[in-house]
Length: 466
Image (cartoon, rainbow, N blue to C red):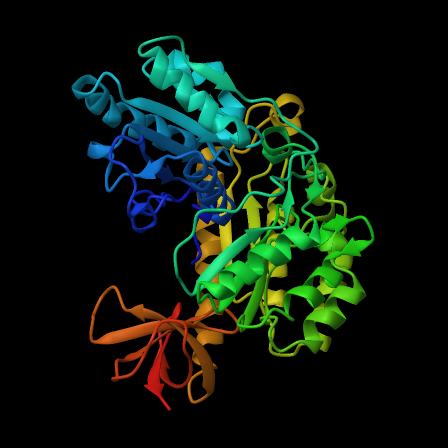
């Protein structure tokens, strides 16, 4: 999992957030929608939200794009590569527009907010551009385009500092692992990051809304929930902080595991550490972005903490939870990063010993402080070399950590057949490691079984069911 292409840039397409199984008995005349998602879990959660909103207004799910009346591409804007991938996808969908001139094609999410009218300039056949705070208005926007035919594109990208989509239920079907967005937006304004500009300011979802969704997931058979937020542990709603919210979620009957991502280091309180350590349901895995091992670079990034403070936080977390797994984000080649400062990052990786990491070379994102004020003065050759070196370093550490698990027995939540071999099944340990083992009769998705690890790769535990 060491890469320069993090999950927010991933393509999760081909999965319609409006499930066809939910439209039984629906009239065929109702408009059919297909939602394709690019990005992280928050984008997937937003696609479920859009699906729920449209379903509530009588829209049904299309089995595929070819049978859809409306296609929505829900997008990510964290990196330029993700946006270019979406433009490539839109060019592919032009053929469907030619075959069906009445088809409504929309772009939603972070890229819609970031590029706005530029999307229509580059892809003039796009009918809708809808930002992440405008989903309540999505049905009326779609209806206007269905009625207007080949009219002007509908653009709604207004950010709303109050919008948390209270009272709306995402479209979900039975499953085992789901997610709930508990906080929207971000107030950190790191110099390299575009998220505050495309998702707006931080606002927490009311605890009763979150609990309603958690109970709904449990009723559908979900055993695991991941709480989502750009800086999820800075969550606050009136007198409720994130540790309080976790205390509420672990009491939901039927849920066996609780995860959250991604916490921000300066908001990781002793109260949260104690809460996490005390509850067995709260998984002992943390994604704790550090970005750099250099004090000066951290300051230029406006991360709000020093390396010493970050390392002390890791020490405190591991003292309370010795078996916790920690992953991170790191950027190499940030403007003005010297070779010595890059070596500081290597030293941090070696001393912290992350279980895995998402590793990037710096690239400018328009509208950020770094793009406007900091010269991108590190050559691509140096960036690529530094990235390759930290990937190799982290791969070796991950291999050692996974090898240390051989001989141990761990609880694994079953996810289903392995992609490589249907005779083998796979699942996740509490600390977010993939385990693969031979299938045996009576296994079901969502079951928690003990697996003894017999061997491993640098990313996977291999073993036998106990």
